[in-house]
Image 1 (cartoon, rainbow, N blue to C red):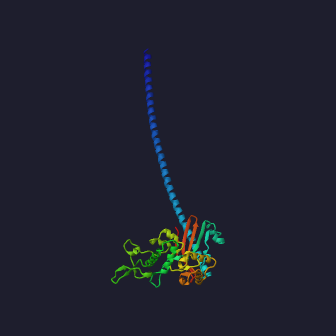
Image 2: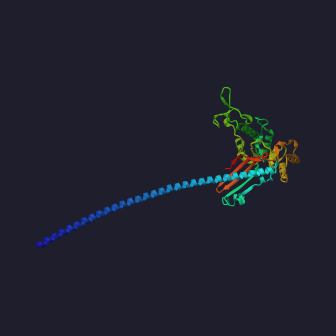
Length: 397
């Protein structure tokens, strides 16, 4: 009996200890599991942060690389455009040389006469460059397949030359030509422009010619001081040169002196002219470096009516219509035709009329893939030396 009680007590103690041990183990296991879960969550958070950081680094690297590639592509594109533009300019230069050759050959075959029926008066439509090369350029025909040429030659002396408004009867002397001012007034009236602008234009031309060569000059006095010289008529050179070239913001009249007129757009510097007026005058007016006569074989009816006193616009139009059948060989033929049109011979100045031309406008356009060059060149043809030279070049923007 006593043994059984002791055994039962030991059994209870053993079971209690076993249960206690199991509970302790369970608690430890739960604690370990909890710590493992916490460590797993921390590891997961760390792995997520690492993944996000890696994605950010990759995205930043992609942005930097794409920016570098884009800038490189832009630079390559810019270099390619510069190359195409340079090639188009060289093609335009070659076309200009070819056109000058046409003018020289035209001057040799029909010396002393320039009329609209000449080879120079035939415009060139938009044509592929490889078509000009022919069999010579068959090997490189593919290189010129994307290059197109077009252009025309215009008689510059078919327009009214604003340089004629100022005459130089003697070296160093420049004065207004009243006959040419009257002709320009008649042209302005026929075009619906205020005729009072003719004299203002002549004054501007004279001032620009006087200041163009003397605006930076100074004269040395006997006391050794330098002072700005007054305008020397005729552009005559004299004195030294100032150490302050250019235009300054001061009250000096030389700072406001007009530049020499080189194109019709220079009329906008004269008060009273508007862009609409200049656009209306552009087909009939030009500015050449020297005084020139009007070519009666190529001039329009408006210009002829302006330069010939007493001739109406309708008579000039009939004169131009008769000129299409036969051109004039000399100034005597022109005077005879004008007398037939009812113009008195005493009013005709033979020095202002001519049948030949020295100045030509060459209008050319070159399209080379994406590059385009639209250029107008003033060319002078010397009848004595049978040569041509470029006076000025203007690119159309």
